[in-house]
Structure formats: C-alpha cells, structure tokens
Amino acid sequence: MARNKAASEIGLALSLDPGLAMPKKRSLTIAGHRTSITLEDAFWRELKTAATEMGVSVTALASAIDAAREPAGLSAAIRVYLMTRQRRMSPKG
Image (cartoon, rainbow, N blue to C red; front, side):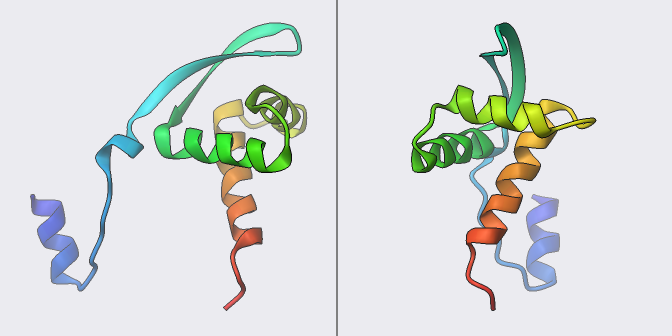
C-alpha cells in the first residue's frame, strides 16, 4: 500500500499485474542438455510471442540466444534480448 501511495504522490499512474512479475522455473533442452530458466510470466509470454512471430519454437529461439549470450546467464540474456527486440519494434518518437 505504501508503494502505491508513493507512486501516486509523484503523479505516476501505474498498472501492474503482480502475476506477470512472479518468476517461474521452466525446463528446456538446449544443445542436447536439459537446462532450466527462471523467467517472470511477462517475459515468458514475450518469448513465446517472439518465437511465434519468427516462425520458430521457443526452444530454437532460446538456443540461439544461448549461443550468443557469453558471459551472461541464459535467463538474463533472454530478458535483454526481449527488451532490445521491443525497443527495435517500437516506433521512434
């Protein structure tokens, strides 16, 4: 409650679905090995959307990100990839 009050005091109208911010572990097979990633539902949904738009599976997209991620962890690399992708797709203002 205090956080919402602080946001409203400075004029921010924020809407957040807390369920989308909850991290969950998911398992994938990448390069023949089972691995787990921890992503918030919001990022998982965006990863699935990106894969669909690219015509590939989530595993294929995660594998491509994995191949390019050095030295970042896979979950972090996925988040950064999705943020960068979103920025590229957003109209420049």
